[in-house]
Length: 414
Image (cartoon, rainbow, N blue to C red; front, side, top):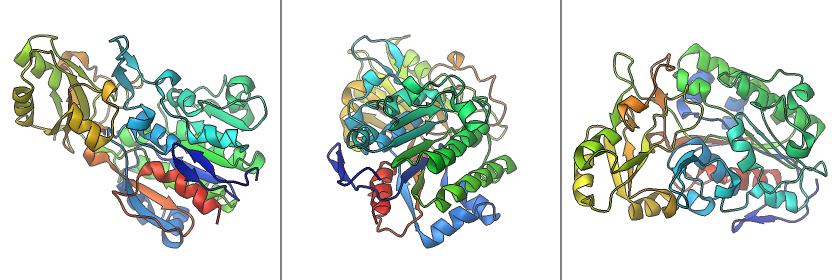
């Protein structure tokens, strides 16, 4: 290994690993998925890890979306530190609604960058390309000590920009379709090959929740996905790495008995109460991959006009079916550890089986072929946290998914 001393990142001290330290983020992995697959005998390695290693549940950050949680795992800190509080926001500098996937929005260094600066070899493999630049911020690819590429763009990765020329050709797997389980399988396969041949000190593997959005834990397609994952986990474990398996968020059904999406359209309510387009409702789940979720999740932020009676709006929202929490900006900053300049005047959270939308006419739900499953709220906050070593871990809520590398490096230093 290349490291002799611990590494500091964002005021946390990470152990110098003696063996590779790996964190795996299973996107959308509601704990029930693992329970069902293990019960059917489909995940013998993860079952053994639970029994002979350390098995906990942890809390994700809120909103329980992909980007905030992946960047929390990458920095070891909540969104108020790293700044990424959704996939989508109103840019406070311009007032424009934009994707929050540009490195300019990142306010803290990643632990990957800090390990790289300390001399470590760092590998990051993502399913979707939207995370790649953020996770790879601060890495350099000119000395064969860093690799950061996505399955989605694996045909066109380069040594100069990603540390790996044509990753799909290197792996011997075709670039997968973005809406497929194969996108995540590519990540696992690449992780195994990197561990065998390149031997990183620190490696992060993060998947897509395409399967979890479509299939419930007891459906065969979901069980097949976790059976596939366990085969690759078996190889990673056999190679001697210290491994933490966690998730960015859970996943819950958000549909009515007839299979149609259960949605409260908050922009329509705002238009009715305050006048058309005087308030702005932002859904941070919004990204280019709407086939999964139709841009419907259980978290929203609302920008109110100056003249609005905030107390009256809060009271009306709290009396709206499906809305479970309405927080002021100050309350959301405190409770959810969010950056205040990137959220609106109010933060809304909906219940386990209902989503928040903007205006009904703005959501194209034609691509939803199965009953809607989604995330974003408190009911999707609990995630697995499993280590293939015996290690002293707290319970949730003290244990967070963004502790993954703190404990992975600790386990790797034993």
